Length: 260
Length: 161
Image (cartoon, rainbow over all chains, first blue to last red; front, side, top):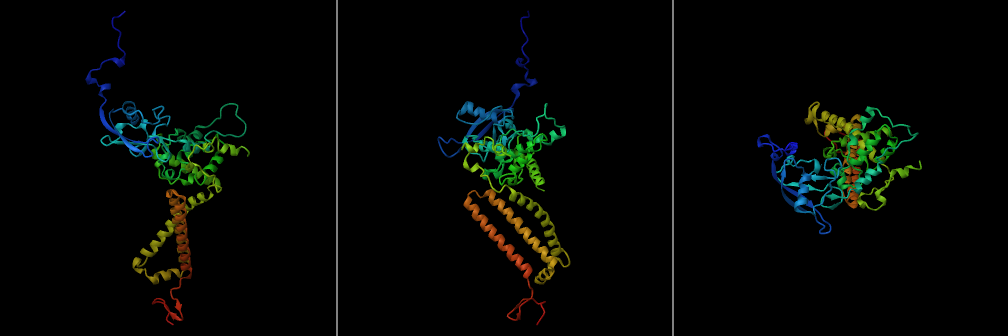
C-alpha cells in the first residue's frame, strides 16, 4: 500500500505559469434591474446591484448573485439554466435574450447592464410575467400531431427531405422572446404572435400531419399572420436562431396558395 | 365535422377567465378574408405603382424638354388622350388605396383606445374618398377651355371665338 494516493486531477495545484481556474478574470458590473411588486406599489422602479463577476459568468449568474447574496426578494424565472427550458427570457440592454445564454463579457460592462421583464405580457413581479396569454395562443394553433385514416402498425415514416422542411421551427423552446419583441404584439395583445405561428408552421409543413388546413384557417384570422409587419424583431430575438419571420412568410404563402 | 370545434380550442385558458381581457380574441365572424385581400393588394398595387409612377416621372421630367415643358398646356395636352387619362386614373386609385390601407394598418397597430382608432379611421376614409372622387371627376371632366356665361376663360392656346 503506497503512503500517498494520487490526487484527482482537479485537485492538483498547478503552477501559476500553467494557468487554471484562478486565472479567470474578474470585473465589476452594475446590474440595473426593473423591480415591480404589486403588494408594495403599482409603480415599477430600478434597483442597482454592484457585483464582482467572473469572465465566465452569464447574466443569470449575476441575477443569482444579487438574489442569493444581496436581496432575496428579487424574483425571476429559471429552470435548466442552460438555454433549453426557455424560462429566463428577459430584456437585457433593451434586447430580448435568455439570461442563461448571455455572457456578461459580451455586454458593455463599463455601463450598467439593464434587465427588464419581456414586454407586452402582464408583469406579475420583478422579471416574472404572466405567460398565460402566450400559451393560450400556442394552444389554439393545436401544437400536436393530428392524423386521419388508419393508424400505421409501426411508426409513421418520413423521408429526410420531408423532415428537413420544418426542421427550423422544431427548435422552439417557447421562451416568448420573439412574441414579446414584436411591436404589433406590444399594442395588440390579441395578435397570435410569432411563437404560435412558428409552432403552427412546425405541423403545417409536417408531411405526417393532416390538419394543416385547419391551422391555416385559424391563422387566416384578423389577428393571425396578416398582422405581421415583417420587422424581423422576432428573428433577431430568437435565442435558438429560428428564422421566425421566414416561417411566418411561409405560412402566409401557404394560406394564399390554398385560396388560389 | 363534429369534433372540429373541440379541437380548435383545446383546454383554452380563455374559458377559465385567467387571461386578461385585452388578450382574448373575440371570435371574429369575418375570418381573415379581408386582411388577406388587403395584404395581397398592398404587394400587387406596389408592383404596378412602381411602373406607373416611374413611367409618369420619365414622361413628365425626362422626355423632350423635360421638366421645363410642364405647364397648364402640357397637362391639358396629356389629358386630351384617353391613354393618359386611364394611366393617371390607375395611379390615383392605386396610390390612394395603397396609402390608405397602409395608414389603416398603422392606426390599427398603434391606436390603443377603440374610440381613438374609430375616429382616426373615419377621418382617414373620408379624406381618401374625397380625394379619389374629386380626382376621378377632374380627370374625366377636365376641360382646358371652359366657356363661362358665353365668355371663353381658358388658356392662351384655346380657340378664340
